[in-house]
Image 1 (tube, rainbow over the protein chains, first blue to last red):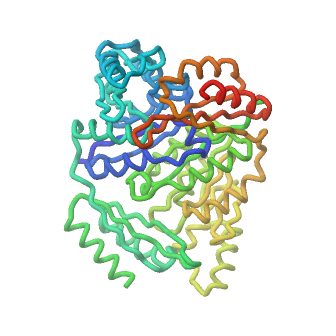
Image 2 (cartoon, rainbow over the protein chains, first blue to last red; image 1 turned 60 degrees about the horizontal axis):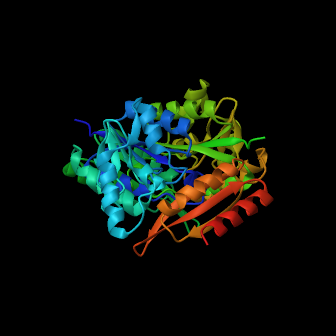
Image 3 (cartoon, rainbow over the protein chains, first blue to last red; image 1 turned 45 degrees about the vertical axis):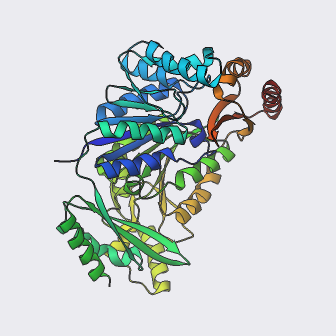
Amino acid sequence: MPNPTAAMLVIGDEILSGRTRDANMHHLAGQLTEAGITLAEVRIVSDDHDAIVAALNGLRGMWDTVFTSGGIGPTHDDITADAVAAAFAVTVDVRDDARALLAAHYAKTGSELNDARLRMARIPEGATLIDNPVSVAPGFTLGNVHVMAGVPQVFQAMVASVLPTLMGGAPLLSTSTRIDRGEGDIAGPLGKLASDYDDLSIGSYPFQKDGKFGANIVIRGQDRARLDEATARVAALFA
Amino acid sequence: MPNPTAAMLVIGDEILSGRTRDANMHHLAGQLTEAGITLAEVRIVSDDHDAIVAALNGLRGMWDTVFTSGGIGPTHDDITADAVAAAFAVTVDVRDDARALLAAHYAKTGSELNDARLRMARIPEGATLIDNPVSVAPGFTLGNVHVMAGVPQVFQAMVASVLPTLMGGAPLLSTSTRIDRGEGDIAGPLGKLASDYDDLSIGSYPFQKDGKFGANIVIRGQDRARLDEATARVAALFA
């Protein structure tokens, strides 16, 4: 049975402008691979209501699960909760359970639960909350969509909360074999070998170092014996 | 007049699996911002023909220019040229000018121009070549789509070849102001200030460091005087 699939929607002007280099996508990709869930597509859109709604509706119909990051804080550019509600055509408002979490937290820290902070308790109708052990303001799950914060520490904590609730497949195993020859020399024999192993994914990732070309041959699959056999054949082929 | 828009399509199993952390997107984002072109959307899809065709056809109709990275080498998993041709419904075959570039290069380096390497001369009908000063095998431009290599050194060289041919807008200027208070404290006044400057984009990017919360307020726009005025007001507001 093929592994379940996932997509990620990054809501991030700061990544599109080049100001910030993505960290959350890289983290989620590694976690999903370990859990046996195939990350099939990522989209990055700007902090724009219509763009978020369109991307989310595209992705949630196409893949088993969607993770979003970003745009659930207290400032004027935090519009993800409203966009998710619009995508699902449900209402969104401050919800008592989320408000109670925030009220308890800010009472303890001595900060005021002002209108801005209350925005973080706006939860679309029908969603369940995602625990945020770092800074309390919750994420939420609606249908097959998990809505999480953009701050990396909070994002990672929310991923850790959500992942155990998902059914994964067999973990995806991989090997990587470095070949110090140009891809043009190895492509022919490698292509033939790949056709013998259509239960595995065999990728060639070229690199250039000190003016020399080489490639890392990455083989991925769920059957350790098949993986080892194919890896040994790659090594023998280009020894 | 609003700046021209661009999108990027990353063809990359290695990024979706978490094996590699993206570098090309971050590079392109910075270059486009400098050139006054708005990177509006990024999609990352796997090395899958149908996924590439669907994403490309989605993006090229939506944005002024599309850049792709990855999948134009000589190995069996390099399927981008065929997918781009399919998206545009044109034929693709080894083309004489691209073959001549490769033949001259491999004659000089003493490598054989074998069938695998010849795959890199497969160019969709009607495309123009993109110069590759690093490793010769060209990228290509078809309609509003620029197809480039995934190896970062080659990708960057191709971006440098293509960018001067594009019409940019006024360069996007930005300022960043670090505020050592939680977003919940600054969101209210910041939102009011943002509504006074709807010609600027004002974003709040929260961070957490040593257990304390803060935010970088990034203001972007094309008018230096307006930008400086808004930045001074932000600094004064939270001094």
